[in-house]
Image: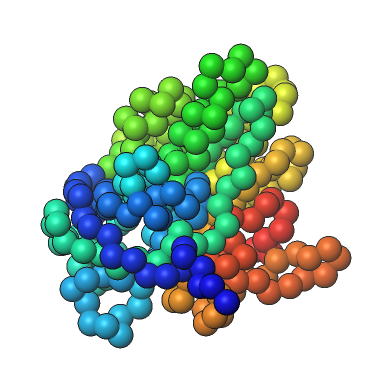
Length: 274
């Protein structure tokens, strides 16, 4: 049986590491195979080069990929010894990675309005989704708009805003401390928009902390909107073997246990048992 090339570890060269502030980093790698297989919502499993061989890999969502140049872009936050070590790599270093892995966001129909909801580094796969959606719909009059509802503790936690603006995405921010946009949770500007919109087809896609995803799930179900939610879990193996990232979901009239890394991380609205 031929091995799946997307699961075979590869050595990727570091092209750049950019400090985005507040502990966030943008890492660009030369990884032609991964870049060609990447899709919004999929992730790669990264082995940090300076850690011992027994250290577990870190799952990081793909922020962008360019098959033409082979460049793969990741965004992560320094939260522990693994990501702290990853934040020290320099141009020319090699990073071992597996992937892309998992199931990503389906591209919405071109006549749908795409509503993105993100928190912290959860905006990373949403950028890839927005760019992919807009690239496919370029020059087509039936294409609808893309809006990003983004939340964070402070303005420093709102990532990639200039990148989204460059795509033509409308941004509606919220911060816990009121330092930028609406003061409060990201659901505040989202609710205001949903209450005012005249109707028509819309698809919600969200990535971020579980309470935010649950809130988006509830709103999508109550308003009859399609939605896709990307769960953030600690994925030890990344391929569904260790059962370390299980999630209970609805399966018809019953429930089932699935693996977030292999069966997700993206699930449709109404499926997750919160």
